Image (cartoon, rainbow, N blue to C red; front, side, top):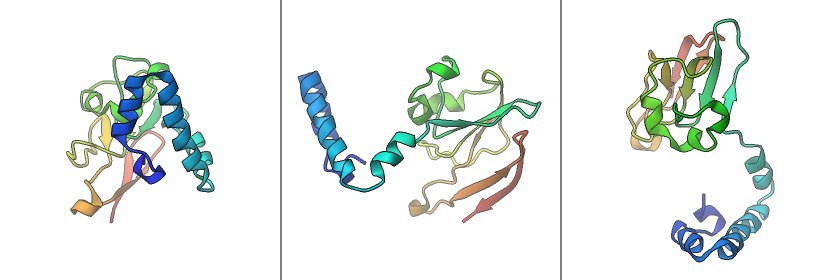
Length: 149
């Protein structure tokens, strides 16, 4: 993503070491580059970290990108949904009131896990030979159908 907007991670890390002013200038350049592409800024501002279903009587469902930090409450997760993938594999019991938690990406490329409390719907990188997965999920978290492409 950084490269797509003319940035790179090394420059960003260097900016963080140089202080708040340099970091702000680097970030603002990226924002300006994003604004040059119609719709990109709007997309990034409405991008959600997670999705929650309403409780159908058996517990709500939580949908995250890659992970969760089970030691922190839902309200304190922040970017854990994107980056705390290791914590996802350690979920063995309910997290708060959620009947089941789903993620769509496993950075460890461990493949799909469909029968666990913490469900992974990642068949691997399609470019690397793994299938793209999608599921029809019932309100109680049951996987009614699995689609593979």
